[in-house]
Image (spheres, rainbow, N blue to C red):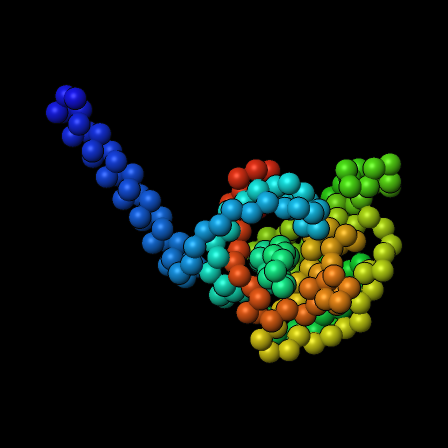
Amino acid sequence: MNPTFRRVAWRTVVGICGVIAILFLALIGAFGSGYVKNFYLPSEAMAPTLEKGDGFVAFMNGGGDLKRGDIVLVAVGKATYVKRVAALAGDTIGVANGIVILNGRPVPQRFVTMEQRPEIPGGPPARRLAEQLPGEAAPHEILDTGPSQVDEFQDVRVPPGFLFVLGDHRDRSADSRVPRDQSGVDMLPVTDVKGRPLFCTKGCGIGR
């Protein structure tokens, strides 16, 4: 191999390794120590943000400094679920007619469009709505497929060390509105949060 080419190749490799190291240190600085892991979505509970079959890379560093609107990975038994933080410790949260009531105030919803959903073949179209929780930097989108049992949830106060989470596909998500003995996740200890999605490897709307 030509010595000049070898030197250039070596410098390129060193440069790439340096960039990777800087990115890794930046991740540690932003999120704390942890590791990355690949996931895919086996259900439509987080649609339209994450569709069934979407893939993403998550940084597994625990909860950290959580905010309303954060998407998190939570462990319930041996299963891992992806949900959105809707209420923090000290918040009061309920649901009335499908609208989140946070600390006594309804969280605004804005109509975006109607769409036919693949998980409801031949069924009525779903409403896609924009919703922005207090403190959330930008709105996220949710789906409403009509009246359901989880459209009503009596107000509860989130105790210290716990979170209340929701799925974005509100009528098809077994989240904090559903007890664990009914296959939901119930009110979650913060220690059940294992990580957060970083970027997509297939489909999905993380980062939009």
